[in-house]
Amino acid sequence: MSPIRSLVLVIALALAACGPAPQTVAGFVVDVKSTSLTQVDSFTLRTQDGQELVFRVGPLELDGGAFPAGHLREHMALNQAVAVAYREEVGERIAYKLVDATWLQP
Figure 1: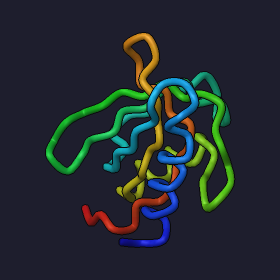
Figure 2: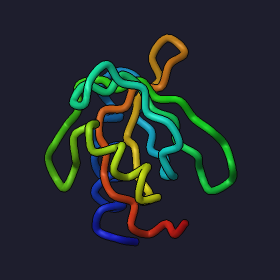
Figure 3: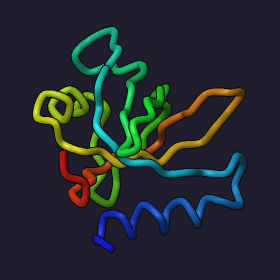
């Protein structure tokens, strides 16, 4: 397992006791909805098994190799995989951490 993937899993486990259970998923960004270049409201991720999952961007953690939501457009343009740590709240997936998913190949 890669160090980044391990980090995402450790973070998810550490936060499991606080509020809604965190989850992780990885895939390729196929759509980004934003109100400006720096403000991303939501994005769609296609997983390896073909699911398309929509995420609303919440307050993001930017430690441990994580990146801001504005970087999602570059990942989409270059077809680079992303791992998303998120919580489900009131029927929505809320992303709280974004990292490179270098273990996935397009």
